[in-house]
Amino acid sequence: MQTLSPLETERPVVLVVDDAPSSLGMLCDTLESSGYTVLVAADGEAALQRLELVVPDAILLDGLMPGLSGFETCRRIKANAALAHIPVLFMTGLSETAHVVEGFECGGVDYVVKPIRAQEVLARLHTHTRNARITRMARDAVDVAGMGVVFVDAHGRVAWRSPQAALWLHAMDAPPAPGLLPASLEPVLVQGAAIALMTAAGTRLSVRNLGAAALGETMLLFAVQREGAGGAPSARLAEAALTPRETEVLSWLAKGKTNRDIGEILGTSPRTVNKHLEHIFEKLGVETRAAAAALASGQLG
Image (cartoon, rainbow, N blue to C red; front, side):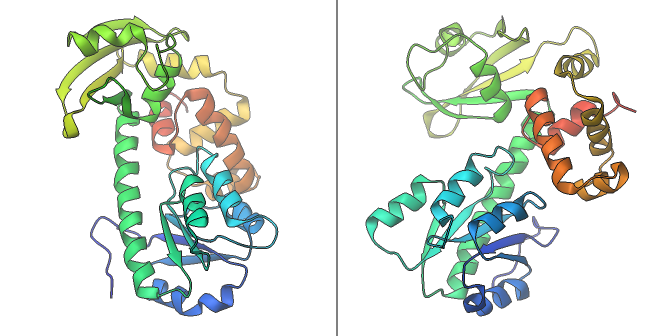
C-alpha cells in the first residue's frame, strides 16, 4: 500500500468528480485508507462550487459528464489563479488520441483509462500531489521573500518564471518576440551585470544574473530596491487601495485564520471571503495566501 512521505504532515485532500460516484467506491476507500481525505462531486458545476469553499491537493476528474464536461471544467479551474496549481488527473473510458490530447491541452497532468485500477491511480496521485506541493512551497518561498526568479534557456527564451517575476515582466517594455525577455534586460543576460530599472507601475527593481542553473539555463533574480527597512510592504499596501472589508480580511489572514474562521468573525460565508481574497491577491500582485500574509504582517492591526 502507498504511504505518504514525511513531507505530507496533514492528510492531503482529493476531489473526485464523476457523474456515477457510486462506481468509484473501491477507489475512494483505497484513497481514504492510504491517508487521503476524499471529497466527491457529481458534475462539473458541483465541483466548481466545492472549489469555492476548499482548495484540494489534487482532482480526479471524469472527462465526459452531463452538462459541463470534465475538459471544460478543467479549463475553468486552470483559468482561476487561486486554483491553477492543483494537479488534475482525468479518469475516462475515452482512450482515443484526440481525447488524450484534449485532456493534456486543457491542463491535465495525467490520464487514467477506465475501468479504474485503484492502486495505479494511488501511485500516480501520490507522485503528482507530492510534486505539486514541492513546487507550491518553492513558489511561496520566492514570493514571501519579496523576490522573483526567471530561468532563461540557451536561446534567450523564458523557460520558467515565478508568479511575482511574471507580474514584473508584464510591467516592463515589450519583448522583441513572444517568449523572450524585454530588451531592457538584455545587459543582465548577455553581460552578466546587475542592473536597476523601474517598471511601468513605478516599482524599483534590481536584477542580477546568478549564472548557470540546471539544463543549461540561466537564473535571474529580481528584487525590490528598498529605500528603508520595512518601507516596501507598507507602500505596497497603500498603493493597493484595498477596501475596508478587504483590509479586514487581509488582517485576519495575516493572523493565520482560515476562510471559514474569517467568515465567522466577519459574519459572512467562506465563499465571500474567497472572493475578497481573489481581489486582494490581484491588487497586491501576489498569488498565494503566504505572500499576502507576509506583506500584511506587522502592517495591519
